[in-house]
Image (cartoon, rainbow, N blue to C red; front, side, top):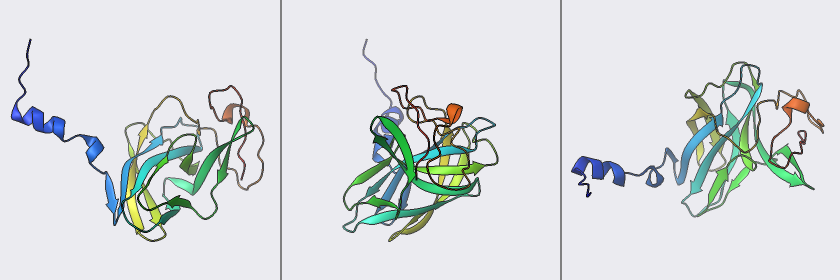
Amino acid sequence: MKRILSAAALAAMLAAPAFSHDYELGELKLDHPWARATTTVARASGGFLSITNEGETDDTLIEARSDVAARMELHLTENDDGIMRMREVEGGIPIPAGETVELRPGSFHVMFMGLENQLVEGENYPVTLVFENAGEIVVDFAAENRAGGMDYSGHGDHGGHGDHGNHGDAAMEHGDGEHSGHDH
């Protein structure tokens, strides 16, 4: 059976989200910012989005700020001899000219640390992202429950840095059954 689409239905299909940008700041396009929804006891969460630099000059994400968390940090998760470790990124996250950088579970991400309240699925949380060249922009991170990737819910508010060792139930999930602490 053939289906005939109305002009409105066809227009809606052609307005695919893949061709739009959630936010723009100069030559930077920021798409689908989201944060992992948390439980009532979680003190931390990861924030993710893609950043496309359509310009001819490199930029760097140097800071994130939000009233939702006592502290925000830019992090990278790396595989260290089969153990996934998180560390704060010194100097920020590079956004090379003409490229897209994905802040995603298991890679670069924004950490919400010292959460006083739960990040509730379906709610939006404003975060100010600061770029070295492009400046600042307030972006709403939507709390989502997504399966897979890293689990930052037990990451906690570590009052200091160094090797925090194994956090037991606060360990990060990464699919191979091993867990690690938080390295800086």
